[in-house]
Length: 88
Image (tube, rainbow, N blue to C red):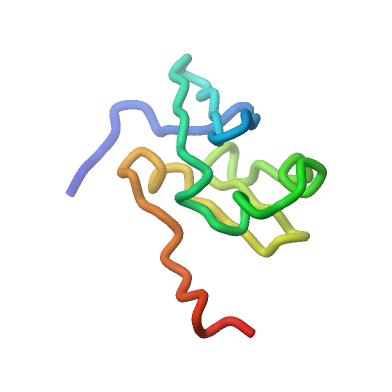
């Protein structure tokens, strides 16, 4: 089991052309390719910027595009695991 000395909590997020960026309360920054999250990759700028940081920074939710991301999973490089062939 992996434990963190400081719980990773996002304080801010933003996007560039290819990446989701996060600032953490402890000063770290992280970028993740948008290709890891097809819903975000295909979303408009307005949809991407319409998010809620939840759980004191442990989660990010986009209601309009039904996307939820657990911040800890981003540190492990976890991609979206949705099977899009089953979504109609």
